[in-house]
Length: 565
Image (cartoon, rainbow, N blue to C red; front, side, top):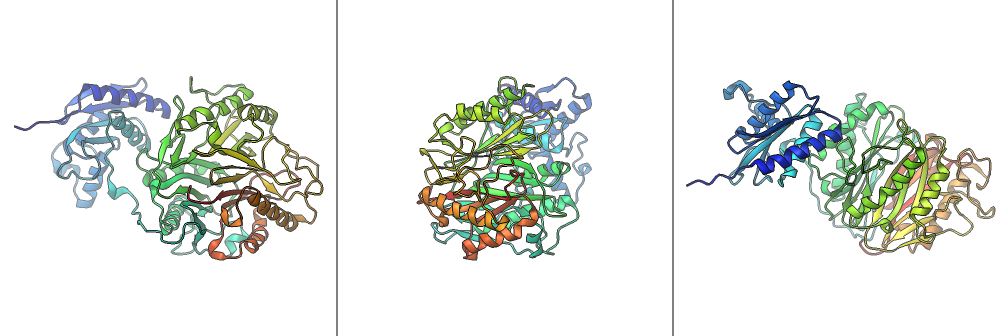
């Protein structure tokens, strides 16, 4: 006698509740359906505002996924591969529209069913884009306690390569690009591995087959991911070891291109943290990608109960002991809304740090670096500083920090991004006679992880650092222009690493802020003199962020000290 396992009403109820919550997160009125192992409907629901045609298509999706034992988009791929049409199946209720997912007892294989894959039923939703329909359907499957089936044919082919070089020695790999790109402000395209940690430069969408930058922005995004993949594979990095992926785009109009390749490379909900920054890029370039990864780790997405991103990304991720956040704003988790009061927004943004770190298994004491993006004009900088001090009251143990003026959307006043390390005690380090005006340290260390705040070419003889507000007329920089500033900053950088218990050999990444992209060549020349071994240099990331009036260059260190973290 055969025994049939199937989804039931209890699972269907969980799926629909999760679907409603996810649809609200994405701001889409949607329809949902759950079918049993026979393809019969267990439950269905349609949100207010969702057209009736969406419900009809959703019922077709769930019927197709259950009866064909595969996702609707997988069926579409199967038909294309076999040069078939839907009419070949003889069932007018079948569809290949996105958002119909089969639910299996064993979801590991993906694609067409194999022996041992027991179909339990299917879920479907409609009313969104391809991205949101697939995303919400996955959330519904997970709410029932199962893993979504992924069609592996749709994934990029990732080569698993072993890494055999000494872990205590910084190793870099490069992609060759024409020298003129550096003159335009492009980083040397590299990835660096040091003690199981991997960092990249800004990786552009240059087509490595032609050496040219595609005119099509979408193709640039594709090439950027292909280039990133080549670099990471060379250092033995797997996709699930990526903790943070940062997009740099030249214009907000390219945001619509982000999610396509993002969902292709990270098709399940097990995704890294993500941040998108709009900055000036070399002429003709629309995107650069940057990654932080921990080899041997497994990405664990992190959320703040009550808060979500509308895009398909988590609030952050943990990989091993490392914690990375996506961007966090001043929304209240109790309501999901943002206060109209700018100062309340700032206080709430800092308040959101604690529940986020708790989700990671840590606390505020495990934050080692904080990026603060304040609305242009710095109108509420003092409020931010007051909130900072209240959040981190111990002046001997505060995270490193960088605060930037940034054009934020609408009435938003602040965004935060966290880098943390679990399991150590945070300590601060300074450089004699070189200080920040804000109550922040020159840098911070937790365990083997070191981050600096901004290190600039301040003249130690003059004493105090640059004023916190932008447009200051105070001059504390060493005299001699950009080259003198760069050399002094690099000297401070070396001193900082010594004070933190390491050396220049322990620097894995340098983020270098420049006032003008045309300054990259001169700064790069001085950096290369300091790190003379071409195959042992840190990953370099040049960014054209605003700097105080008298400052032309500023360095930010990420270091990995001692034994494996």
